[in-house]
Length: 102
Picture 1: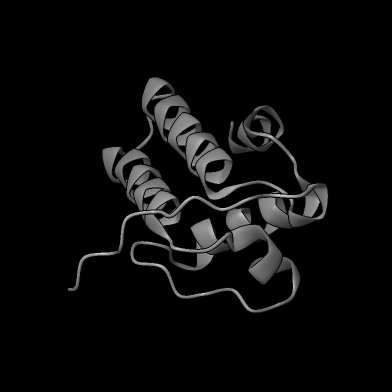
Picture 2: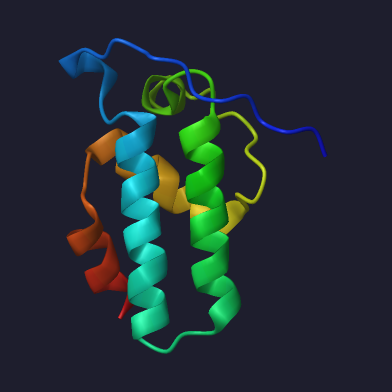
């Protein structure tokens, strides 16, 4: 598997939604909460891997997702992809998402 490029500095506007760093931070937080809740360890690892892929993606993901052009990210399957789409389109932060996890 080819290494993902390092993130480039992207100027963000309000219309762009959450930045890749904000998306990644939210998914890392979800991974941490899953671990604290005693979930199966692979779930927490999967959220952290997805966060790494989001952070390294070369362009902002939120506008692509909102436009219906969600890119294929390594480590992001249907379940995590659905949460990513929800977060990118609604801006819902981790506290709301993690309430649904428990």
